[in-house]
Each structure stands twice: as structure tokens, then as C-alpha cells.
Image (cartoon, rainbow, N blue to C red; front, side, top):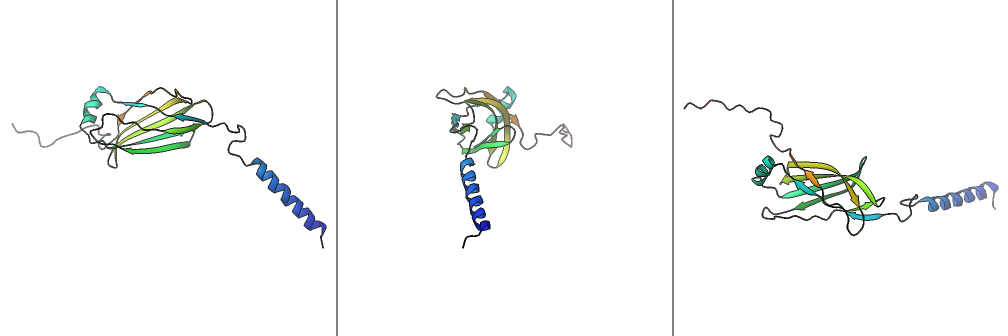
Amino acid sequence: MRTPLRVAGRTALTALLLLATATCTDQPTEPGGGHAAQVRFTPTFSPSLGAFAAGLPLDNITVTVIRPVAETLTVRNALFAATDSVLQIDVPVELLAPSESLQVTLDLLSGTTLLFRGTRTILVTSGPDGTMAPSIPMTFVGPGADIAFLNIAPSDTV
């Protein structure tokens, strides 16, 4: 026997299921609006840091791409040999528009020790040409980076 309360409950449940199905999309304001792109960059060292960096055993890199304010799009790690002169890392991202400004952080490590870091906001565009490779200035942040003064004792006796 159907009671009016049971019929009303089923009708309400059916309506809620239809509403939930109709509104659950990834991008309700822009259906199918994803834009594939590649993040490209070139790390650069100041002339004084370049000679210093050449003597350090850098063997892996971490690239972090963030959509401002705080949406991490990708974190990519890659190992490389000390004998490699060029390292190409594909960093694919999905843009919400044909071009976006994304924050790119590049970490150069020796094993698990962070030695250099650079961060820059880069305009990334989709399409076959993609983005030109802007430079990311690298700063030494490894052990001893915050030393202001070094005193060696005892003094030389000669």
C-alpha cells in the first residue's frame, strides 16, 4: 500500500539524483575547455655561481608548476648523469585558457640535498609552438648558504 509520504520521498530522491547527475562536471562553466601545453624554461646561473655549480655533483632535478594562488598542476622529478650536457624534461600541463601565467619552481639537488632553487612566473601558451624557453635565475640555497661571516682560528703562524 502506497502512502503519500512514501511517494513524496521517492519523488524527492529521484529529483535529487537527476539534479546531481546534471551538475557533476569537471568544468561546468567551460565544457571541454582544457588546453594542453608544455612548460619550457632554461636555468641560468650568475657568472660567479656558474663556476661554483660546475664543481658540485648535481644529479637530479625537481620541477613544480603551480597555478596561482595555490593549485599544484604537476611535480616532476628527473635523474641525470653528471656527464649530461643537456637535460630535456617534458612538463605537460592542462590550461584553463589558451594561455596562463604559471609559477615554475626548479630545484637542483645532489642526492637528496637541495643545492639550487629558482622560481619564476612564466606565461605558458597552448598550441604547437607553445611557450618560448624563458630563463629561471638559480640561487644557491644549499648547506652554508646563509653564512654571513667565517672566522678561521687559529691564525697562520708564518
